[in-house]
Image 1 (tube, rainbow, N blue to C red):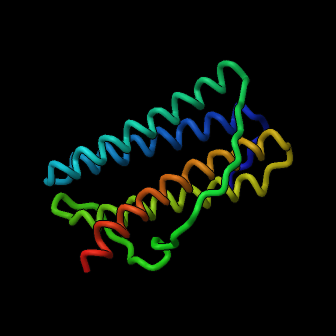
Image 2 (cartoon, rainbow, N blue to C red):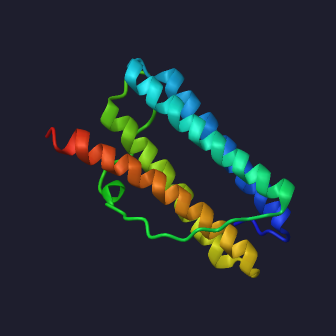
Length: 151
């Protein structure tokens, strides 16, 4: 795993990760045929862009606001199979893909926080992990309400 020597390196890594998420959701939006799904993935891309903007602001100002709150975990992503993006994927498959992506990002930031030697650096990673956890929960709730309850 990559090691970081400065908060600047961490922020650049996180900014790049958020841009990758923007690109991921933008690609998903372009790949799906369902207009509702297109809109949903555009919305997620926009939210990830807002996270990137927040990280850029932290980088520019040096001011970091860290909020800690407990985020529930329905653990649905632990029990669904991996799917590959495709133009005709179902809404449920798209949600599974998004859950898995957010779970991977969450784990990455937790691992980075665990390796951080500096408390400020650890706080940044824990805050980023918390954000990814919220995203995953949102996808899990959507999956629970619109996929599991239909079956």
